[in-house]
Image: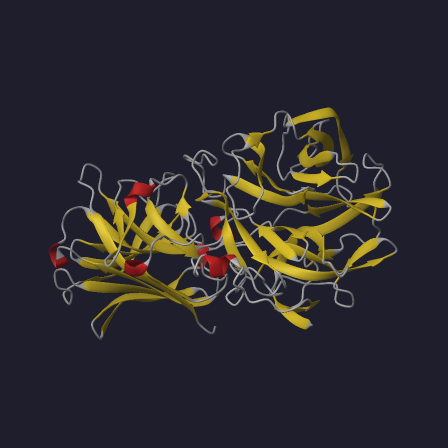
Length: 536
């Protein structure tokens, strides 16, 4: 059956994809940096329809993130399957370094981390050879000294899975396809036919990003460069091309013998990227024992033809979606969360760093209570915040809350809705002391871009805050009853982009509560949160 994948397959903040095929099932993981829980696990049977089945790092004991910068924490995971066990290897750049976790079921639970002594660098991957041996492949600075920023090497060493120790001698095997290449990273090792292949990224994760490949008949090399490298990049297509930063690929094969590759890319608007790096898919064929990406195109396409039977997780009684009664929203979908009727938040919800989950309480018939904390969104702590990924260039999001003291709220607590790029760059729509104000935070400095009194809201009455993004412009306000009260219109949000704010993350949108230092904490009741995409 022919179907068509729509790119990106994971819209929004889903960077550094890694995928493995297990029979007719496909499992995908992505980086999450300072967000908790870490490393979402996505599942599909047809590469078109996906469901989130959990998160790899869902316990504080697995994932220490205290004081981690927004773009620190978890970098570039790899997921693999061997002999009945799933493996995820990743780097926590803030605590512990490179580690491996395992699970018999990709839905979890996943083990505590096995930190790998002597495994320096970032972007690790695992490879299981036909003789059962496991190999670690990763990156580290040039052992002879870096001649320039990004002068790194890809190296291999055997890994003993019984002791979780690297064994034997490490060997530097590759430092990139191009002469003087910057940042050869994200390596994945495969054995396909007569060759071992290293698929890797080059050029950094920005405009010069690319996918390259080399091969050898021996795992230790020497590795032969592909004269067609890079096999995939958009860096030659110009600054105005709508899809950029293409790189960080991972190969996999279907039971029918078809090959595909996942990779990251961005979709900027006017050269500004607010959603971060997203997950795309391409078809791969083999010519002269080399992979060729999207034959006849040589670049990513809006659609990818796949020859797999259609699979709808909501119709499959054995899917996680069906078994969990729709606990998780489908990636890229509109969603409406009625907190009063929810037993638990879905796995797509994100907190910052290590949350105190006792501050987030769902109460049947009422909603989600957030207990405020003095940690603000501008700090590298764990504020009372929970949100979801921005997944569209144009969207409308609403959050409904109840003001327990109406317009007389002068207890030093503020709560509201936020479009969050990082602690230094975000836009807040916050209720405070009888008014609603829109605050644009840039470089850690707040600018009030609009303010209105909450004169229409009575004590104990629900107020709905809204944030509407169309491209790089924001309109915010609140509704009460049938009345609409705009707070700010046509606000420029280009500063909430990777190009201005820096880092590796995309925007999330969520709800929060904060109290001033020395002021008693407050419980703020949110009754609902909704997100719907709009046409740009």
